[in-house]
Image (cartoon, rainbow, N blue to C red; front, side, top):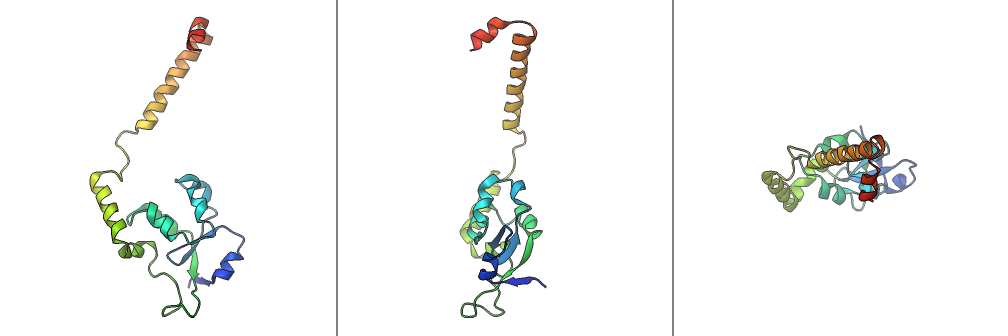
Length: 154
């Protein structure tokens, strides 16, 4: 059975946590590996449902990655609690049912092919060509003694 946390208990914890769709996730181990870089730091110690759903689609691999870090559920106060007193129903995947506009945008992006990585990694190709040109320049200037090339390039 999942552990139930109140907001007061969460704010007393000494590890990086976040809330998404009423579920509590310990994300300290994932922080340095997050593909989106430092953006995830905005979610630490906060309810990051909107942030998560804005950046991850319903079929995103992020949903399965997130499941690995789940440690419990948020317990709502008795005045605001639905039956059972636990916030959030089915997690991030179920939240898409309540967000038809985001779901429609995600479907249209997938149909347009914008959600997939490119067939040829253009940025990596450009970086490789630049690196090869630099190595050629350095070899000509310092290895072959073409010091005039170094002056001309400066």
